[in-house]
Image (cartoon, rainbow, N blue to C red):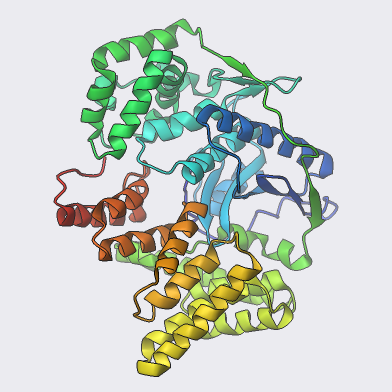
Length: 504
């Protein structure tokens, strides 16, 4: 899911491609940008499958198909490359989903080396896209078993030759988990956190049963509503489901019988599925490993000094690599864009400004160049006072407005416009706050923008709104510095609001 790149730079993402391999291209579909060297036929087939799964999830959840945020999908050679991207080994991780300033993306393999015959690359991709769909279109408070259970439910669905999807098909890849591990639901549903492997196999079994049984499906909706209203896991579960021992017996019986409720669904999608493609520039191909390893989460949330020092070192090494490669492509807009962002993440404001200025000299209307310059100017205003500070803030604001006019659908110009007030110590206008709200709605998995909105609501003493916006971070099923920091802030907000509830 949101497994951030914490280890070494993805140096091997391209290493397994032979000199004679097909060129890297990006294929455009309605909901996806697929970066692949597999060739047009395979990329189109993959896009069609993914578009059908997107339609399935919209049919299942009632989410409309307006202004979709495209997900970048990077196909690498194998699961070895996935682990190298994360800086880990022998973990069984076969793919991950996350988001940064460039938007949400998935890293997925063309082949899987472990997990048995059911653990296919398509299963991995469907699972990770389900995570994106949940976080993008209905971010809220969810227990870990449901986050992974929902992804397994969708990911395990199979596609027939006629295009129908068998929604609810058994998660055969989790068979051993279900046999080996089982926590009674009266215990599992009362826990704040559980082991990851319980979230997958058992999470799938619970989610499959609660989703497909008409009576229990209504109770599931009530349960999730109660969690988001601030109820504890235990209180929400007992209120919604009643006798948890009885529910445990029902789910166990459901699993042991193996008589799954499977629904054939025939989602229709627009054609042609791939609306265009282009070859990546030489700079883009060279910088793909750095792009896939780029992380711009705030370091402020990493409290442990050794962890922070390790991440600072990793980011510096990545920045050095970006500088080295970008120098070979001084006129390439993508190289300059990544260089400006990597410099900013490493605190090199002069380097970031220089890269952004060069980018704008090549392309005066470049949205990312305008946004980066706007944010840098807003930061510069902090060291000024009086008329000089106001003038610098106004300059930053003008660039944000120009970026917004260049692409009104982009979230980053709205964020830059808001920051042109906040960083200058000025009270943001109503329009700036509305813009920030729209930016978070467009890219809900961007932690930086989400936290800015939390603090904006807190300053206005809109405690309930601040708590609601912070909840998806504070209630993440995966432990991380971001979650720990969000829970600490949640406690402060709840104390200010006089709320007795805690993060679930």
